[in-house]
Image (tube, rainbow, N blue to C red; front, side, top):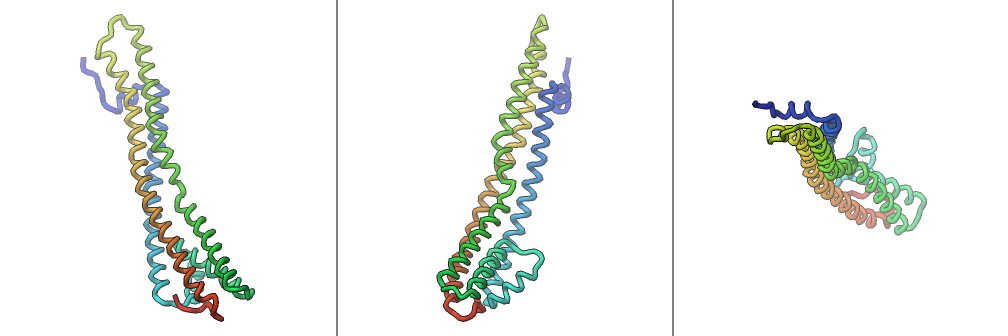
Amino acid sequence: MNQDMSIITLVLHASPVVQLVMAGLLAVSLVSWTVIFGKFLGLKRVRQGNDDFERDFWSGRNLTELQQASAAKPHTAPLERIFGSGMREFMKLRERRLDAAAQLDGARRAMRASFQRELDVIESNLSFLASVGSVSPYVGLFGTVWGIMHAFVGLSNLQQVTLATVAPGIAEALVATAIGLFAAIPAVVAYNRLSRDIDRIAIQLETFIEEFSNILQRSAGQPSAAAGA
């Protein structure tokens, strides 16, 4: 007798525990894909915003005017917010007539704090992808082991066991492992790619902090911070 061995049939005939595992893995996979697309689009906007501000910054505009224009924008890039935090602290310390070293140190600390906040936002949900990539195969394996146990318990009541009677139960259980891998593999690939992109953004931000610090160091000894970049 021919048996229907399609994926849908196997899922529908699986034990309740295995079905629950499959449903959980499919839900996690859906969330994972949502996070993946969201992170890729978000990082693309971050890179574009950083590049736009960096071109504007190195165009030779007056730093004070650049800060005012940045403050008037409703949405700014991480690089622009780091610049704004450093510039505000630098001007605040200059108004208090502190020495040049204190002005530069305060501006650097403000930019480093802003950098850490920006990096935390950029890295959000990345740990979720790492968890999905590492845990999903084991969850799928748990469903497989449970399904095989359930299948063999059911076969214990049969007088004669053949491959035709064993195959459906084992196939149902193995679907759980397949779904676990389906959830894990894209998460691992996306995590590695996103981590590399975030590292590049972090290097860009840190490089800007050092370059802007050099500009502020030259401006610290001048009576006004309105020098061009």
